[in-house]
Amino acid sequence: MSHMKRHIQLAIITITTLLTVACGFHFRSAKDWPASLDKLNVSGIENPFMGQIKNLLSTLNVKVVGKTPYQLIISNYQDSLENNQNNQSLDTTQPSLSSYNISFTAQLLKNKKVVSSHAFSSSISSINNNDANISLRPSQIQISLVKENLLQELYFWLKSTQIHSS
Image (cartoon, rainbow, N blue to C red; front, side, top):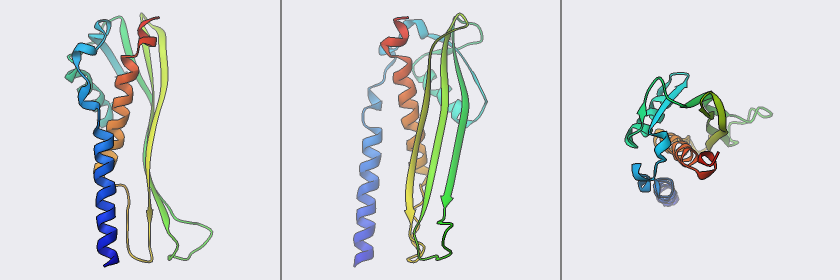
């Protein structure tokens, strides 16, 4: 009975997390997007997350072009999934921690001068109970939600008034 209760609790937590993270992002729209950023040069290390950034801009009807006054540079990208076993003890009955971390730095330039720069990071952690053979490692859905959360932050940073008042 306790296993069933544990699975129900885990399901409720997961659903609540999904709803909380997804909440509000559907309010984004191209009509709120600053007209000065309707064309944007995006550069950085090509990886799947950079593709997600370009897809986000595409949904906002932003043209990603080579030559434009505004340039978005993504740098210092890091993405890791770690299992941290307690190294001080070889006792496998002790819980271990799994975590997923993602971070990057974004710079917005206008005519090759830095307008704004911001470091983004997000993570999710979970505890693995080795004794009970229960693994609550971050799932692919949770990892996707962490990335989606960073895309939301990038979106709000780019459309913030402090960037466009300079």
